[in-house]
Length: 521
Image 1 (cartoon, rainbow, N blue to C red):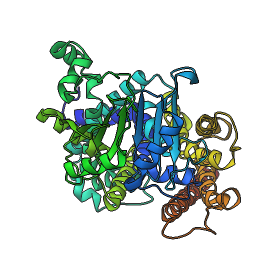
Image 2 (image 1 turned 180 degrees about the horizontal axis):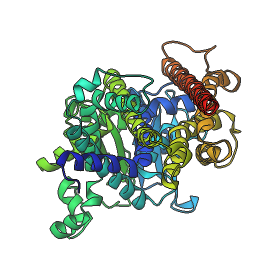
Image 3 (image 1 turned 180 degrees about the vertical axis):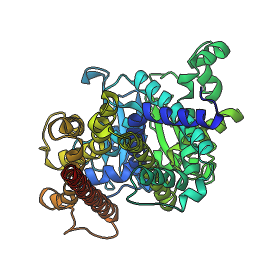
């Protein structure tokens, strides 16, 4: 430990941020994009022409499933809402092989729509806590540990910056490490409450995994805990006697009245076509921050309300509220943009902190000629992650537009392209050096993001030249966001050019002074 408390906090802030900074950058960037995951999915699946509406989607789903899967033991329907424009239906077909899960997507006309095979924005959402290629349990533990480090870094950062608000108004560009410190401070202060909230609530979302020992001590096993929290009734066994079910849309209207108009997000039909058939309606989490989390179960044959379930424990309501706060599902468009901008600020805060660590050590006398292996590793990872992850996202979008629609496992190939783009930027510094990689990588990213909207003109029917409004407002917004991102990377490229010119000028002056000194001798 250091002699002074503030020095100890400085050491703690530096190393708690550096050790996990690259993982946190990936988590923050993809998590920020996940606030618009439905809009990204719409852009990546532009074939959808007719948006589904919950007022008629359940009747359409019932007609489809009655014809397609009349013998399935369970139907599941994800209802559309303001952001999700399709009705997603699921069922199990025992003759299909494997676990037998089948799915289909219906448009507003109730017809199965052939969307391109793509994970869309859901991949970015899942990646920010599952990391895709890692085993899920390991990935979530890694993200959780990094989040704990992030919380420590935020709190220690507040402690060490005694003049944090004064420093916020004193940005000094072109001052080397001082400029990076100012940028780090500004991006930290601008969204400090958000950074604290998103980090803490992120830990809460996975609390059952981190506190498994407490679950074992208090409840014996996880299933007993969830039964205590949700108080689900016993499963109804099929009678084996056929019976006609009521229209599900009629039961949907009854459930809406029962919940005073609250949105419904999910419907499950157990034992369809049987006298023991039941319909379960789950309340959505998109109306407000504090959601009761109610579930209604009806008899699908008689329409009788069998059960009304709702978590009773205040602790569970608190947990669900924190999860909703973290995911921002309740947020309207304006608040969701605020979430996104704050997330971008967090991403920049992490990036500037990583660069600051490297820059401060390069400014030491003789450091530029004798860089330690650890410092060189940090510089390489900075380029590979800070530029590599945006390039990975661009590669993901390019794959969506360029891969053949009939390609087998197309969605997984898009994800492979994501990681291929990231690997390219990780390898690039080994070929071109660190300084060249910053400059050329920024230019590459600017070009990549600026061309994406133009590529859509050549590859999809709905593009900048054919958008219809207001139906295609979401797609236009994504295109504009891509162009804005391109402008940001072009600014970074310009900054790196100027910095290289200043470094060359400084080197020339230094060589001239040295030559003059030798001549005088």
